[in-house]
Image: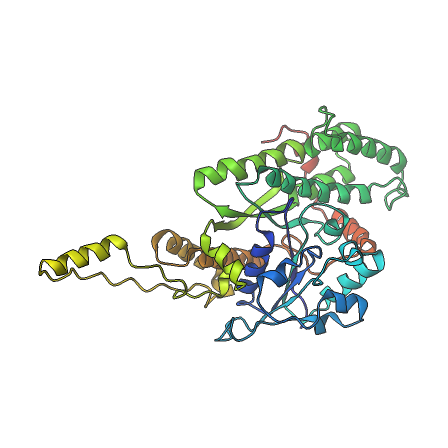
Length: 431
């Protein structure tokens, strides 16, 4: 079995529920095809603390004992999944205790881990990265999209930090391509072009220089300097095709969430990165005490069923029934609750787009439904639709790339960019 897609889950800062999302997302995705969750948040071992499953081998055994990563897979015990509905799920746990050598990978260990993840016996690999932005995060993120970014209306700094991840990804890409001694240096007349490009990149990356505030202004300056050159067209096309995928956690209302998270995130991207990025909101996870309780019980919310933690009877209805009994009246018949459909039990990849609407309707209509589980059912359908409809490098990536493999992939993306009049569009004001 070959991996179809590796999807990373990242957040600019901690405290937004990233690992909780990654665990439940991977579980939901396993209802579509075999899925492995890899915990690279090696400082906290969050996945291990979220799933009450025995772990015989983890990343410690992979790095220190030479165990193949495939032998470090842990599965759900029957008490968590009595019907075997999530038998296609497995996870690789981080080491039980923080150790410097596993928090900061050497190049050799990073490349060995990347190769092992690419060889996992699964259709999907979900990689839970540590919070924040450093080399250990950047090295595992895709080069042409953001993976899945998780942020929340309750943590404004994390929202801004998520936008910084997008900026860092794009700038890493541009710095590699236009390094003074890089692959483009041998082209005729490239020395002057590269000197100009890198000087402009320095100014765009400098948050204290307001004259070139973002990549749109950078591309406009390149267009004025070099005209409708091939490299300018390719650059503009690459920026415009970069996809940003995000999920809002702890969702508490449309207006509050939009004003507190979505609008600041989009404004930050427009102001500091580009107004032409492709943005995809994969969905939201409602704020619910059930998620907190499931984490405490170490039984992820996706593993709950509609009968778990059933709410007590309405206290007003109980009082009315007692009063009716006292005065000799028949208590009013209680309406039978409408059966609640479990949208995680049947996910048809061929109907992913159509079924999104059905799940949305249920989330708004059925107060008795386990709404958080429906949230994940919706997000997985969104993800499957993107997997089926977008090019393979626009959502996650087909395989993780080492730094040595990254540069050829970037050159291919530049040479394969559609030679549309993108440079002229870049010179225009952002929409």
